[in-house]
Structures are given as C-alpha cells and as structure tokens.
Image (cartoon, rainbow, N blue to C red):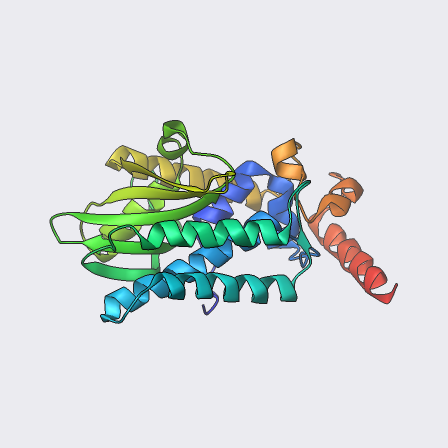
Length: 282
C-alpha cells in the first residue's frame, strides 16, 4: 500500500498516542526503526493478509476455498517472520501460532461468505471535524477491512486477533468504529453498522462477533480527541505510560530508559540517531 505523504491521522496513530505518548514519539516523530516485532503483530498481519485475499476472490467471483485461506496465511507468516526479528511470548512458539492460525482459517472458511462486497482493504482520506463543526487541518486516513451490504444496510467488518475474547465494553469504547463511520459518511454518504470479528488464539481457537454503531455525537468526540492529540504533539508532550501491556512487547524499551523529558525534540532526535549509528557500527 502506497504511503500517504500528506500529514494525517489514523485510528492507529491516535490510539498509539493515547496508549503511550513516548512510543508515539519514537515511532512517528523520531522514526526509529523497530528492532523487533511482536509475534501478535505478525500473527494479526498474516490473518489480515489471508482474509483480504479471500474476500477479493469472492468479490471477483472466483473460487475461494479453505485451502487458499490456509496457504495465504502461511505464506504471509513465512515472509514476515523471515524479514523481521520476532519476539515470542513465554511458552509460545512459531509452530503453535501457525497451528492456531490454520485452525482459525478453517473455522472462517466454514462460515457463510460475505455477500454484496463493496470494498476490501480500501483506504481513503476524509475530513475530521470537532464538536464545534471546525474542520481539522489533518484529515483521517481510514482503511476498512471489509465493506459489504446494500445502500440501505451497509456494514463495515473489522477483523481482530486476540489472546482472549473481547468484551462489549472493548467494542463500545473503541474509537475505531467512529473512524469507519466517519469514512463511510464521507465516501458513501450513508451511516453504517460495524462488526468486530475477533479471531481468538485460545487453546481451542474461536471466532467471536460483536456488532456496534455510532452516532453524530460519537463522531464529534472522535474529532475532539484528534484535535487535542494534535495539540499535545505540537507542544511536544511526550511521556511514557508504563504497564505490562504496553511494555512487554515494546521495541523501544532501551530508548525509553534513555529518554529524558528535559531534552528538546531536536536534541533527542540527534542523540537517537547517534545511538542507532553506534549500535549498527557495533
């Protein structure tokens, strides 16, 4: 997918700042290359790649089989694990994750395929407005995994991978459905429902479905959140939020320990660059 050159917001960038402003700084401001990638990220990406291929085949009227799903998952997994240093969790192995991925692909292939597919992995840039109706300088980039249905009933499907089942609160409190609703209103001129399809990596893999919808109030809140995140970034407000969930698989743990809040961004950037060059030379 071609990178968007224009400054913009996405669900992942907004969510990353809210989760840990310092990780946002290292990845999106200083642009430090990740030394490692978590197994969860690789697994989720492989699942998404396989599903995208599967739905594109259905949309084109081609054969779409369980065999194709499994082959696409395995192919994506192999490419991603060969190209990156993957961090596995305790008591976790590549073969175990591959087995769970194949089992999940088998489960999904047995479900009724989506009908009336409108778009697969389609990325768009749409305007964002705050609750006062002011258009934000940076637009929203949204990539919907799957859009299907009719003009009267359109659904955006978001595919997730997780170690355990989602709760209703996980879905209702997420900004992601608001991003998809904003995108659909701008591009399709219609309100949509959103369904989270969660592929759980439990000992017995399962697929969970949770539906939700958003209102204008939710879209206003999305704009207000993005506006205030933008202000915080412009004012160089970056700090760590340390927790087991944030830190256990973070690729910037050393940079985080070396970070000092009193340094201006320009100085921190220069020191980070020198540290990376020294590490490469070593």
